[in-house]
Length: 181
Ligand SMILES: Cc1cc2nc3c(=O)[nH]c(=O)nc-3n(C[C@H](O)[C@H](O)[C@H](O)COP(=O)(O)O)c2cc1C
Image 1 (cartoon, rainbow, N blue to C red):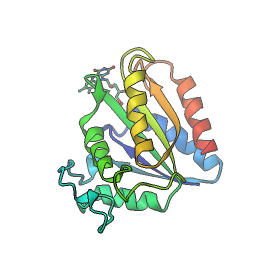
Image 2 (image 1 turned 135 degrees about the vertical axis):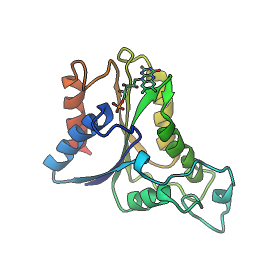
Image 3 (image 1 turned 60 degrees about the vertical axis):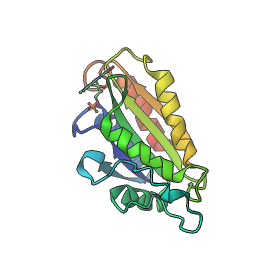
Image 4 (image 1 turned 60 degrees about the horizontal axis):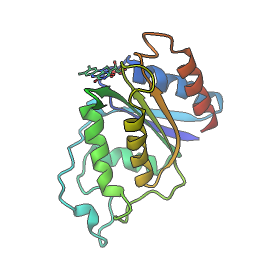
């Protein structure tokens, strides 16, 4: 099993990364591999609403040739996408928003959807109490289905977990998810 991970947090040792590391541990224990990308380190332009992705004669995972395309071309060769983002002021952070807005180029109104043979794991971290943003998180997670991925699991990690606070339950869950991917 080969996965790619997109981390929207700019923090290289933050909560998102700690959870992703636990998933990677599970993946590796089951002889798989995981490649990590940080949105912050990449050249990913915001969606330009150019509708270039709606052209049935020119199928393409977004016509903007930048690192979003590079990530999606890599995912085409892999089995799963893991996505981790922090919550800023009640919503996904800016880097996460920019990345996810580009999903518009791969919804069912385009010829570019994945074929349901790839899984998605979606991780959201936040400081508020556990569960506080679950409605929002589940709505966001559905967007991974809209591009043709099969939503495998959602991790909602509140209370500053896992780096501050007791995060053992989250890390155990993350490792199991990684193992079973
Ligand atoms: C600019 C900013 C805004 C934030 N706003 C919220 C918020 O509205 N609600 C919340 O629960 N946590 C908020 N947080 C806390 C982060 O979501 C939390 O620390 C998260 O786990 C960070 O993930 P990371 O360590 O992977 O970067 C905010 C953090 C920052 C830096």
